[in-house]
Length: 328
Image (cartoon, rainbow, N blue to C red):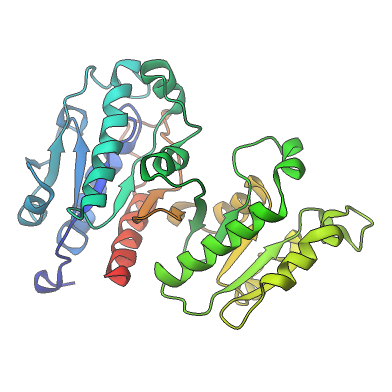
């Protein structure tokens, strides 16, 4: 991408947990992207690696003039320092404020999209009484949306877990026709509006082994999942399933759908992390703005060692830019 074809608005990147690898991968991502994917970082510049060239900005539009020479930083003063690998609850409020500031700038139109660096939920609970299971739920709250959908996307696969951070024993009780109907609808709309797929093809995984094998290994497929898939199939949406999950993710099967809806967390995340661990991106569908995130955590065990891989963050920023360009 040449300077004359640069986007008119940068991406807002919230800082995440400063004691994790977020500051390091941010600096590495800027070094590799610079003008090709302009973004600005919202956080305390004291937490960046010492050799990071950065430029303080007062508003997002100023980032466009700095991204070629330095990482644009919209500064927030945090209460604590960042001891690598050890979260400080004093910084929790700053982490929350970084997310809130980024959301406000995207909603106002000053930034084109939101990308979020990983947070550490216990530190947020301890230091800011954070009342949400994670980023996704907090963003839904800030946007005033009751239901949003988590998609994990990579060049190899897109997956959506219908239920997310609950115990496996709770999945059959949480999974319902209304929930699955909403997840399918939000996924289909996201594929159309943010991924440019006019007539999405969605594969639905079964809940039980072998998709229940005609009731021999579970009843949910027979009782309601089959009927729901048939009901929602239409000219503008090709919906298939329920498919046995153990045959849904091999190479030939993946050519037959644009996204797979899975019934629980690991059914979705194991295949994508196995196929494309470093390039997986977390996308939140159903928000009134674009949000992506690297598909990994704070990695305290390697924070500050200089070995953190920025690939997932780079893919998250690039995907956010592509999605923003499609939506304009």
